[in-house]
Amino acid sequence: MSFLLRRLGFFALTLWAALTVNFAIPHLLPGSPVTSMMARYHGRLHGQALTAVQAALGLNTHQSLAAQYLTYLKNCATFDFGTSVSNFPTPVTTVVGNAIPWTLGLVGVTTLIAFVLGTGVGALAAWRRGGVLDGVLPPLFVVATGLPYFWVAIMLILVFAVLNPWLPTAFGSDSGIPMGWNSDFIGSVLQHAWLPAASILITSIGTWVLTMRNTMVTTLAEDYIRMARAKGLSNRRIMLDYAARNSILPNLTGFAMSLGFVVSGAVLVEYVFSYPGVGYQLVQAVDNEDFPVMQCLFLVITLAVLLSVLIADIVTALLDPRTRSAR
Image (tube, rainbow, N blue to C red; front, top):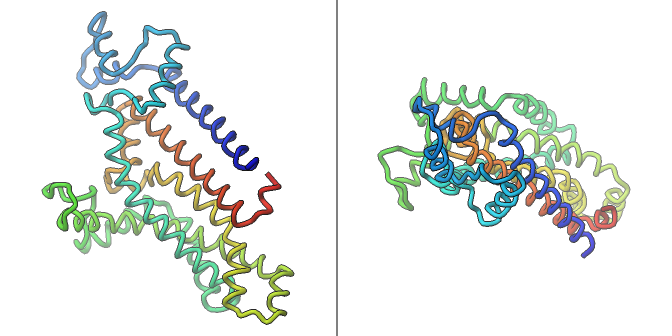
């Protein structure tokens, strides 16, 4: 119980610090959402007109900084992030809420697949150290891990969409198909997801393979593994229950961090494919100086990372009780 309370206290403190930084950054930047929005229309506002637009965007610049901070904390607690500047008068929650399912479906599923495949391949490579699998795959994945996301994405587009027009090059689905739980829309979404998913998988699976392989090689040299062999336990049980279970802990923590950053999306990949996820939306918000959307996205990303780390700490403590007393 004390371990859980410590982690929850750390979570609350870090979340408060992130909220404070998220509030401070827009106030330190030059300009404002109103001037940014009017600049696109080559106009300026003064007096009551400026006050009216600020009220429409949910800005209370006439309040003191402390009052604005308290209002901001209240709005965050009620999920009221104001109105999007670049998509006026659409609420920020609607803009972000429409982007999150696309990112979770693409980046989340691909990250899970990469973790499962990479961890499994890394465990097999370590178990058969010095074999063909261990000699070929790790160097191959070292190269793949060093490739930039956007370069892999561009190469996949060139091969599978330009030279061979088999798959679409951009967007999350065909524009002529209405959104809904029907076979046409689902098929279109899956078709558009192949190339961005492949680019993420190619550049991320190597991390899980190498981490699991290196950790498990060290674990296999431990005394308790030798004891298990001396007892005559089967290779399958030694590999899964003794070696893999203890070796997966670093990968598990890394996987939790990756799940947290899934919400931010693979920004470069989503941008290259114009995929309507959180990463692409974040780039659009930065380009348009849409501060309310940027604040909401940063908060969502921070909250996702913190929750993922908290869950990883709890799962690690359950799998390895030694960590409870060490924290």
